[in-house]
Image 1 (cartoon, one colour):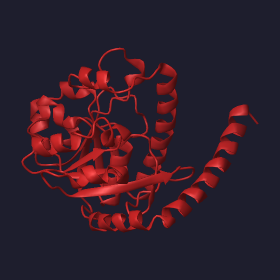
Image 2: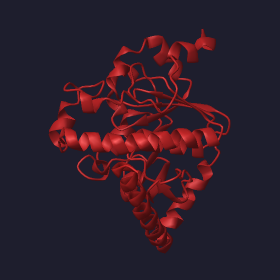
Image 3: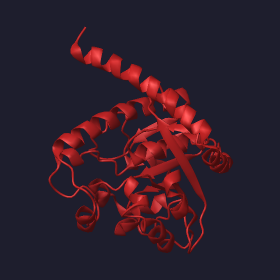
Image 4: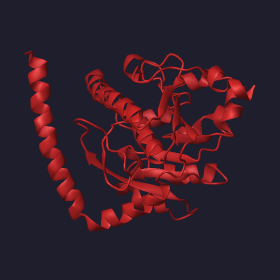
Length: 272
C-alpha cells in the first residue's frame, strides 16, 4: 500500500468525523435552518430544462457574437465578476452566484453593482454569511442563502435546504444548484481552469483592480486548491450521472477534464 493511499484513507476518516460534528452544529443553528426553508421554492423549479453556467475565463473573449446572442434566450448562471464582461453585457443572467469570502468582506459592494447593472436583478446565490447583502438596502432581489460545511468524502450533497457539500469553486456551487433546480442539461462556458499555469490575466475583462484589492497567492496554494477542487469536480460529474443530468464543458481549451466537451456550434446547431 502506497503512502498516498494510507494518507487518503486517514484523511477520509478525519473528514467523516468532521462531517458528523458539522451536521450537529448545523442542526443546532435553528435560525439558519429557518432561513434555508426559503430555498424550497427553487427545488425542481426548472425540471427537465437546460442552463448555461458562465465563468469569467479568458476564452469568453473568443466566443462569436452569434453564440452570445443565443444565450439571451437561455437560462444563464453568472458568477463572480460576470457583470464586468463587456461582450456579454446584453446577456442578463437569471441566477448570480457569489460564494467567495471576499463578497461579504472587501468586495461586498458587488451585490449592489450586480443589481444596478441589470434592469431585472437576477436571483442571487450566496452563503448565509452574506445574508444582509443578499437582502440588500437599495433594489430588492430574490436569493438562495446556502450553508455549506460538509466535506464530500463519498458523494456531493446538493439539497439547498441542508448542510451542503463544499466544492471550493463557484462553478461547483452553480452545478449543485442547477441539479437541485432540476436542470437536465448543464453547459459550462468560460471555465478555462488554468490560472495556476498562466502569468497573464486570468479573466476575460481587465482584472487589475481586483488583483490590487484582493490577496495574492503563490503557486503552492494554487496547486493545492486546484487539486482539491478537481477531485470535487469528478464527484460532481458522478452526481450528475446519478441524477441523469447531461453535464458538458463547452469551454474551448479548458483544462477541466471532469466533463465531456461539446462545442457551442454543436450545442446551438438547431438554432441555425
